Image (cartoon, rainbow, N blue to C red; front, side, top):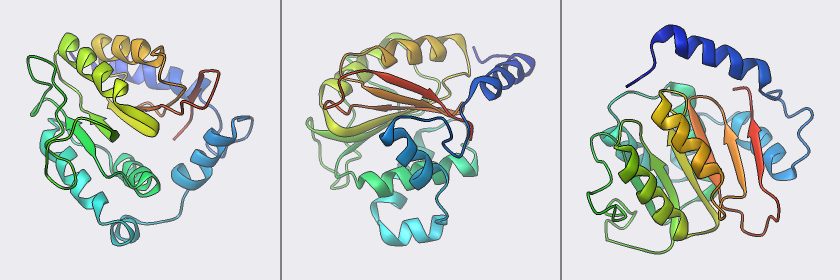
Length: 204
């Protein structure tokens, strides 16, 4: 069950207190610093992003279709810029309105070519409101089929105890090397060439 508003507000204040500077000051990871400069703080508008990468609009439409709650405009723009940077050819989108199936098979029918694909998965969006066990098992299978440049966005990582627990478990997956928490969403990067895991909380 979703946290009550006062609890979410308290969690946001905690996040804001510990989060790293939104300009990247004090961030020693070149990858995370580049993410902050080129995605979080980019000047590109949604129209510019959609015009440069046609896949962006398709993926955002799929995300909207599976989500039971709307994303904030700045989060949508962040996702769009990330997709622009990755330019994924295959992606998986699940949410409350299209959850992982009972057998936790990978939902990849919404790939760019609208064909079923198992490997590799370039990009995945995991929406809020799914069954915890099915979601975690499904995401683990996704991670197993991802490559070094793949990433997963987990929506609502501080919305309830289930999502927080899931986020913390997935951060420990051996194929996840870097994570970024911007409160509304968490981003898991595979980056298999990176030896040590790094976890960043960034103000946004």
